Length: 358
Image 1 (cartoon, rainbow, N blue to C red):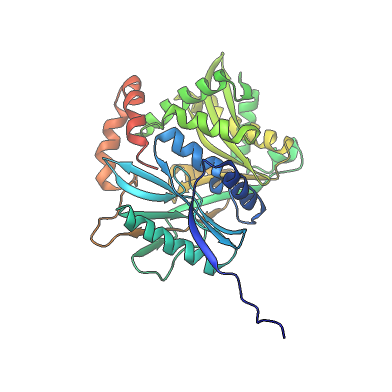
Image 2: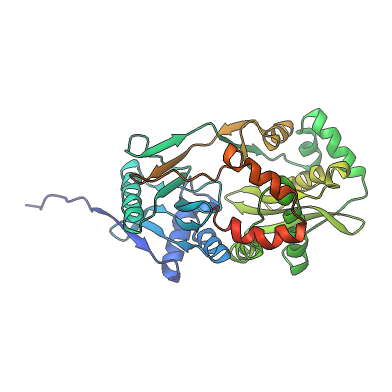
């Protein structure tokens, strides 16, 4: 008589991303999962950790020798904003990636234990399976929206897919004295950082460390690049994009004060759509924006429909929730002050502050 079948138990453990074999297994799991994103990849977690000086604490769920779940976490510590385990750090997505809800719940329970054991007062999940009913968790579904749309079959169809008013702006940008460069060289990186740093200073936000951008570009290799728009040889708009599973994600982008009158941002995003299609992408992921904000309306003008993003936050007993929302009243005075800082000062101080934002 055959012995009764015993289902293999799921185990959850901490994963050392310094081990190449571990990284290879997890990269394969993310690539094969229908909900895997660039922000679930060990490449992102390690690049964000190295680029900001924070600590990677990835959790892995296994059934026997098979990976059945993953929770990438970055342990982010800040004297100004407090400490949190974030999935995933410096990303707009991530969260639990699992084969089923039971595995996802096991990963979340282990993350809570990890937070308590390391005296971390907060956990943040940006997408994925969310613990709706678990104690001490709060779920938000309206603060931010994502914007994704298919790419057209050719250049002219891509232009015609843009709503009329915005299409007119793109046509003007095509007629302007602008040039476009794409690459990952030292010159590309320098141009991007100069434009991005000035853009976020003008918005009242500390710039991320230069090393973060370099680590991400190096980790993603051919699956990341920089597109820069120049006027009279000077960079006026630039974006660092990621490519994953047929989608392009323009992640860190911006323009100088002259970009608006030159319509350089319009040119930048249109050229990126064309470039992404030529390299095999079929979707344009315009990323996350605060609901009702200027960037939110800008993306709608391009014909993208907003889709609410769901995030969850856990706060340890007796702790205060972490607040990194730049639109909150508690940060408004700091933002106004930052906008007035000389650019060299903002670029010097910004990376030390922003590495704790996550």
